[in-house]
Image (tube, rainbow, N blue to C red):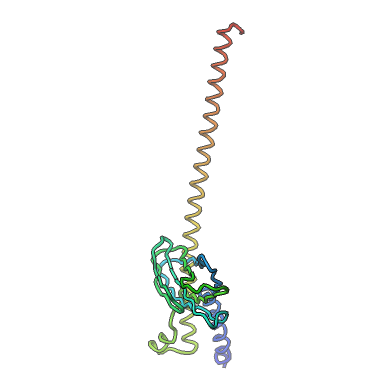
Length: 215
């Protein structure tokens, strides 16, 4: 009787946890594109993460014209992962090979520039990019079991993200310590140079005064 009473609560808690985790991995943005120039969106992603995104040009403000856009997605090292021109809708998907900021840039590439042109970008990362319907049919799971599977994947993603953040913190701390050490050595070197210069100046002045028989 107790297990039957707690099952709905468990399902609700699991669903809430999965929804919270999914919100951290999915981002839908609305971009107002300028007549000239580029509008970019960046996302910091760790390595070995699946990324899926859909984009579309919005026509509400331009019902009679049909402008097109160009899209380019680059990795932190500048490698082109997706490039599309003369597009109104599109999709890109890839698995990250290095950690860092991934950049998606949009610009108008048609003769019909106009004003107020907008594009939507639905950016899904990690757990949010998984096709859970296909996974449920393939593994024959549903209900609470499916939600628990989602929660397990979400926990793994959070764990990997914490490991990534810890590694980044250690890297930044090492850089900071190295910089502080260099500053300390530079300060010691500067002080030593000042002392040597002062001693040389005193020695030169002493010799000058003795030569002039002032002392």
